[in-house]
Image (cartoon, rainbow, N blue to C red; front, side, top):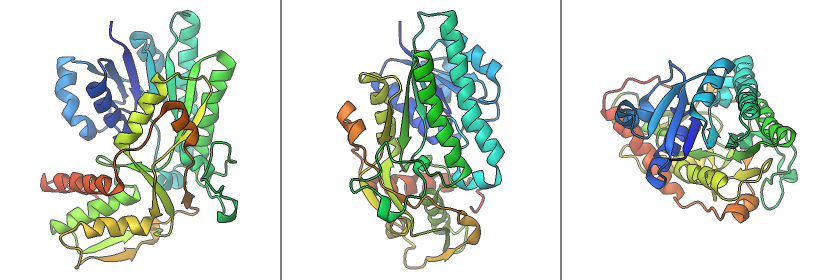
Length: 345
């Protein structure tokens, strides 16, 4: 019998790439949790499989509805659970803090409690669970307090947005359920990861989208930006999902927590310059700061120390930064070429 993986948030960038990875690298069946209103653009290439019930199945449930989670978990009984679903946009969390906290903290609690209830009813079921927190939990670390090797797992939390606060709760809930109920739950704090299908509310993706729209003559040759001085370490989303697979299959240790991130560090402004250098309109494009793109507080020193995870799994990032940026820009060029209408955000 095939192993089963359940992915919450399968319609997101990471969830859809994780499904692609598992289809290519395993013989598992994949069950994706999505809401009835979830956009399907990121999984459009999977819909034929879903319709034919060929290894990919959609389960309609919501983190804000525990009964739906209980039904899905009871019906599927997955061997692996990847909890990726979240309100994942830090800037949005400043205007929607309650929704962010409810979805990310209470939603995670509802999911883990549903697993706990069903494990009590069937003690032969022992799923391996990955809870996805975020590097944003570390927040705004002053330069003088940043460890020389980067932010390690035991650096204090200083969240700088309601989103980051919600991910602190997510992180702690994962460890709580592991320790209190002997569930095999592991938590990750993934640093900036991007690539094709990245949402356009994130800086590098909105840069790429705007450049693609400028090249197509859809908007004037001006890229609107926020804080260009923020420091980021980038990983490719395809390296990220490979890390998540290795997390649950390489001697999973209940209650452990890991930083995961890339090796290429630069300011956001350098990321913009890299994308502009790839554009046929680079000599025509100007840059303009837009107030509404700035966060009230910015976690602006995000450099990870990933030695713990690398030592445990042997994972290393493989895709270079320039390839990630090129693939992201080409993703938006393709969407623009297809005639899709976009918000100018």
